[in-house]
Image 1 (cartoon, rainbow, N blue to C red):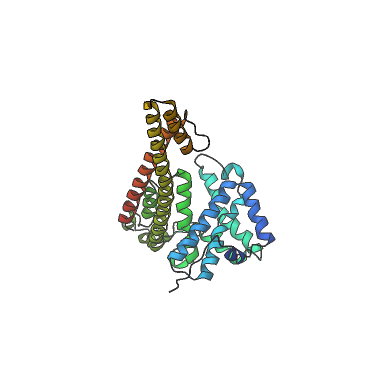
Image 2: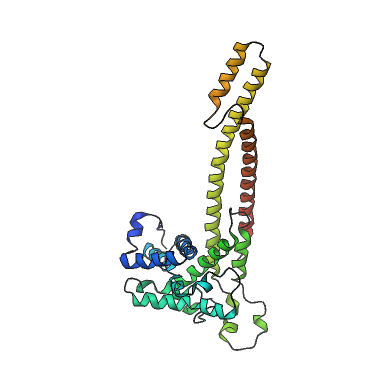
Length: 315
């Protein structure tokens, strides 16, 4: 069992990607055609890398799998913009066209010696363990491990991006969808049809082990968001104490009997004010600071609750 780790953003690791002029050109094309797809590819690659770490994959396989993930949607270069970027639901005909991005991406990779080693990414990321996926309707025994990993990463990021989460609050609902896709179809046992899907329906679509590892990755992300939010809360607490002190000086100034004492407290206020803060506007900023503090505290509380919910989820 391997315990190596791989940092997707480490410069030395990026060199191992063999991002030569040909590959960079093709990925730049992807960026120019559809920024959303390029960002999605980056997200899926990042997530795939972290899933490989949790699965204790070797560094070489992790690097390989991450590049496969980065290229998984490269076939969308050949999908018409009116289909690829359609805001609403696709028609059946449009969906057929969209599904060809798997084989188109595979063919593109196979024609390029630099991309050929990573052709599995585009080809297998929509295959499902129960045979209900595409383009070939393969089942678990025929779907490479990299394809199973990328499928989970791809499905998760697609849902998260569609819902446009501004925080991880509510992210457990996304994980519940992936859990449903690890379960067999409810009516599979009633089916007598000798089809590939009915024979393998007990498997579900997603690999449950990979989904469980996804939970760990998501919890790490939530914990990191809590850390960042708490850091901001700590800064706000310092500002709240400062504003409270300013307010105390102001109250003392208003009660002062002599001009000398009034000026003394006024100077104390000015010493505590930061740039863009004045004795006239600090009340407004103080109130905004209070609201921001309460809002962030609520976010942290909800994030901790989200972790509790995720830890109770069963795959």
